[in-house]
Image (tube, rainbow, N blue to C red; front, side, top):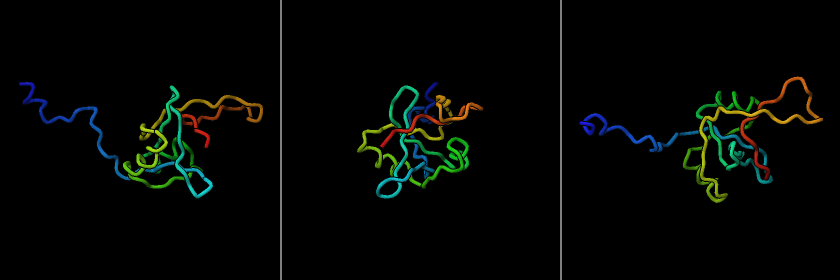
Length: 116
């Protein structure tokens, strides 16, 4: 009976292509490069958003981005041994206070940017 009820349901772990994504980039020596981030537990990850409004809400209006498909983004990050891709991340952490930052209100940033 369970087969009749649940036989056609996809497995929760099945991944479906996300389509064209908005991928944050930064200037590099040879043009624009994909921004990489760290997860809260320190793992390296690529980040993408399903629409520009979501990217702007998390990273700000000044964040440059490009359109890439999920397979293209995975292909770009695979040589860097980055296998994780976070789509539409919403969790943020406050930036630690520094002497150069005003103490009025802490900035909020998504994940942690990898250098280089």
